[in-house]
Length: 313
Ligand code: ASP
Image (cartoon, rainbow, N blue to C red; front, side):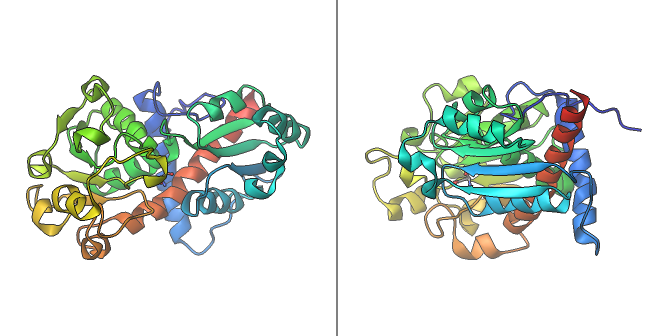
C-alpha cells in the first residue's frame, strides 16, 4: 500500500513540495486517468462537498478542467463569474473571502492576475485553496499535469532533459515546472531571448540558452510557452515574424532534440508565433491534447487529497 504524504491544507505552489508529495499526487492521478477513460466516470468521494471556481482572469481549459474534476468526484461545483460580480462594485479580495466563508465552501480554486493574491486569500478563508494561476508566480496544477504527461510517456522524470522555451519572464507555468522538474531530478534548460528571461535566471537551478538549436540539443522534452502579450508593458520582441524565426518551434529546430523528444504547450497557443501549427497538431510529436486530458485527472487527485486533509483536520 502506498503511504500518503501530502498533508497540506492548500495547494498554492510547487515550491517547497517534496518528491513523495508530488509522487503521491501523480500516482493517484494515474488511477483517475484510467477511470476517466472507462465508461463509469462518476465517483462519490466529494459528495456533499462544495467546490467554487473563482477566476479573476479568463480561462477556458483550466476552469472547465476544475469543474469537470469536481463533478466527476460528486461535488457541487459553482463558477463565479468575476467580471459580473462584486469586483466591479469595488469589493476587495478579502470581502469576497468573507462572503465565500459564509457560504461554507470546501475547496476554492482561484486564478488572479496578481502574484501572491491567492496566498493572501488562503489566509482569510476556512476552506482549502488551490492556486489556478497567480500572476507570473505559480500554476501548480499545470506543472503537475505536465509532469504526469511526461512520466506516462517517458516512464520517469529523473534524469530527463527538459527545455522550457519562450516567454519565461511572464510565465507562471515555467516557474512551477522549474520547481517540480528540479525537485524530481530532471535537468531544466531555459531557452529564450534575453528580454524574456527573469533577471538571474540561473539562480533557479537551470541552464540558460539564447539559441534554440543549442538549447534543444539532445533534449527529451520541449516545452513551449505562450508569448503573453497581455502581461507585457512595452515591447519585448522586435516582431512576430522575427520571433518565430528565432524562437518558434518548427520541425527543423526540433530535429536538434532527441528523435523521440515530445513537444508540449500549456495552451492557449499562438500558432505561428511560438509554435508551428502543423507541428502542434502532429500527434507523433506533440502531446498537447494529452496534457488537457491529464489536467482533469490531476485536478481530481488534488481535490481528493485536499478533501481528505480537510476531513482529518
Ligand atoms: N494557461 C496557462 C496560464 O494560465 C498558460 C498561458 O496562459 O499561457 O498560465
